[in-house]
Image 1 (cartoon, rainbow, N blue to C red):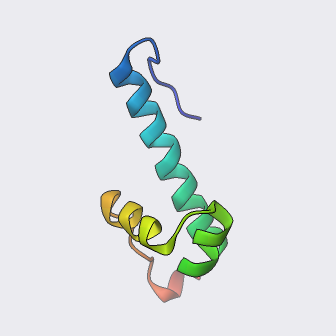
Image 2: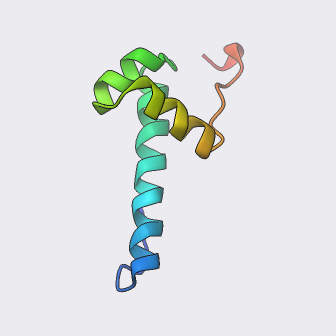
Length: 66
């Protein structure tokens, strides 16, 4: 659950960023970190997906975790 003060523009921006990050991370895990499938499910280009991966510092876990 994301909780933020949406009464200010900054609070709304923070809430939006948290939702986007959680969504990208969740779909990446669901697809086994398959960039093409993740981008398709999120209806964004792979370039946008790579932007979010870099922005949020998302890294694929070690192969042992799968």
